[in-house]
Length: 75
Image (cartoon, rainbow, N blue to C red):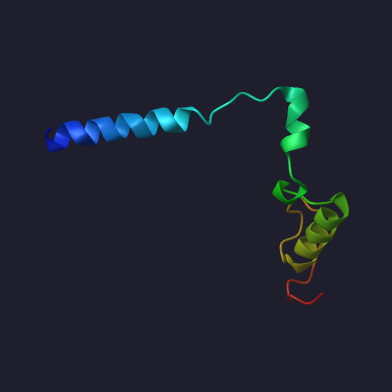
């Protein structure tokens, strides 16, 4: 058995093994699989605090945020 045929057989075996783990998830089952740690924004309050901190640290006015800041980096 040549080296290239061994590699081809090994690659096809690995591909078949990986395809066995793929499954479609129904939309109503996705909530069971979702973890809170994977959310982009954990809470709306946390995102509001981050937006407020960002807007108060920004020196540019009228950049789309509600408030203007001094740009000195202080809270």
